[in-house]
Length: 139
Image 1 (cartoon, rainbow, N blue to C red):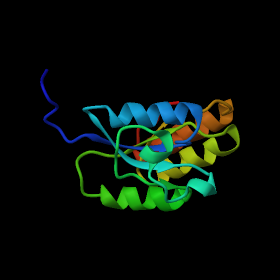
Image 2: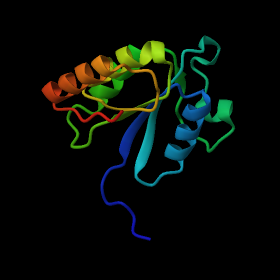
Image 3: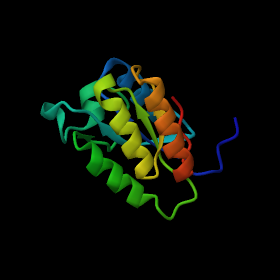
């Protein structure tokens, strides 16, 4: 098997402690082409706890954060001069997915949305916003 000569894709997972978020975290940790750079979840009891301890998965140095905006800001700054851009995988709640996606685009992080519940006008708005920002977005 040929190793990927490129840098791994930095991945943030929002909703990291939910059923689908856990699967994404585990998949990214075991990927050769992706690197987990952030795990975000609203559960305040797990803020600052190592994700691998919570999920009982492959050991890593990623700690859960419940500061969505702060995490996006920090990661976007870490990769601002890199040739590879971070990706946010969002498996949160329909009440927050629109704002999460919009914020991700604003910070230059490409959103991949697995959460349902976006309306057609919201999807159109996000599409226009992503095009203006020259950011890829998958819903």
